[in-house]
Image (tube, rainbow, N blue to C red):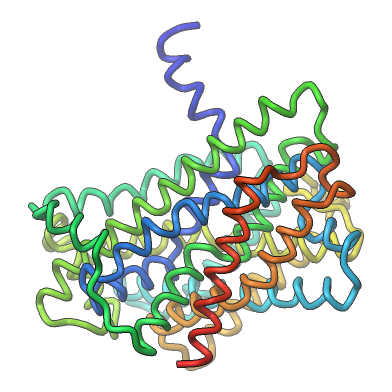
Length: 415
């Protein structure tokens, strides 16, 4: 094997986890992390470090369920839980995803409008249509290959932090010893941060992608150890990448906007200032490309995860490899179209794009709790996982993630 082939091999081993991690830094995530840095300065940096092992654990759980069983999350829920519970869980996913799609597309159209002018609503329709066509008519293999390389565009946010000349000792100190006032604003931000980091659509998407990779068949005993190692590596790389970008976004707005007295991001023009140290007069271009690029990555994941769930509940075939022109996957692709265009329709409501992004993260943080609890039940059932039920360490981490999300959601209701 040549040196180049050896260097490329680890990247080719990465797939669902890397794509899931990159999709986590969607426009909603960018807006939420930006607002956290502007509002709290260094005060919320700890949350990115704190959520990394929890996020990785729950995503590994979802990936293992998909790979080991050869079925997606909703299909396993259908076999395990009463129908009212199943419909409630899938209904939460659909509501969260549609709101997230609407917020992301509104942000993308607003970014393009800011860059070139023109009618933002027409741009919203165009983004929705392009996203649907991309999922329906691109071959699955080329689709995944394209998504992998698109994730590299997010590294621009790392560049911002590098050129700022920060006192990293001070950053580390505030990360491990944050100074916070515990009030409703703090708890609300935590729910949003946890919700945009640990989101329901990511669970269904990664499980569905593992099923795609094994062609919908339960795992072969001889392949189990190798594939579970690959899932662990893939997920840790993807989640690490996601949280690195999140940390850099939050840090850049802390040292630019917060330091300048801007504690509430009302417009995209304010958010752009965080990129000015690296982009100068091109900050608007870099910001717009970042929003549009991550949105085009995330919207298909949001719509696709909804389609996996609905198709599994309805008993339809569910795969991005299905060919619509052959009459395959009509129900599956219809859900993708309805979810995406439903999000576009919500853009015609009087939405504030920046606030919509934040509140979609809050809704994700609340709706994730029962779905995570259901996943943990599935992952510990021999009827679902056979001899590959999750071990004690992953079980503890998965329930810890669920508990943290539940406590923050409960705290929001009480403060």
